[in-house]
Image 1 (cartoon, one colour):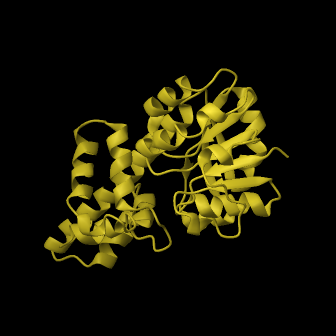
Image 2: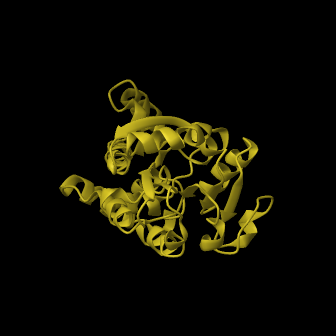
Length: 260
């Protein structure tokens, strides 16, 4: 097994790194807050973490965080190294970072669908984009984390993540507005959700009322900003930003906020 450097042990990164360690992969981790590295082989810096690593994985909050951390390790990568970024940063930032890599270093974009529970149990959906030979190389590692969907060439995984997350977040916002409308018309919530669940919005209802997810509203708004899009997604993002009191809570809390 190749040595892996895993950078970023936040909500998602920590359970993912622990799964890789439990599967027997040689692993060195780095995190901005060292307290989260307990029980894992930790390095003092990103540059130290990637020393001798054939595979590097980053799982960070946003493009700025990835760019900042990348600036602290990419120059240390040896020819033949493969960097897999699993953050949600969109195809534009992914292309920019790929263009800055040293000669002989490759990159795969592999953002995920799923929350903390699936990250811990290895049931994420991994949206992977890259050259076939690079995907073949990293696939056994990604298989530990979930089901790998090969989306196409470089940037395709990052692009599909924005499409899917936009649809999901938009669906939750639609359910929130529908319930608020039902409230104003005096309809019981149970009746409204039951009727919506039986139609094409059943998946959105389930996500809007999920009790075991951990996708902060702040990150949902970030992903919509990366997606750009038209007036509908722009309006949905405005709805998310209008409720800063739930910014660090799961997306499902927006539904309750919209009913006030």
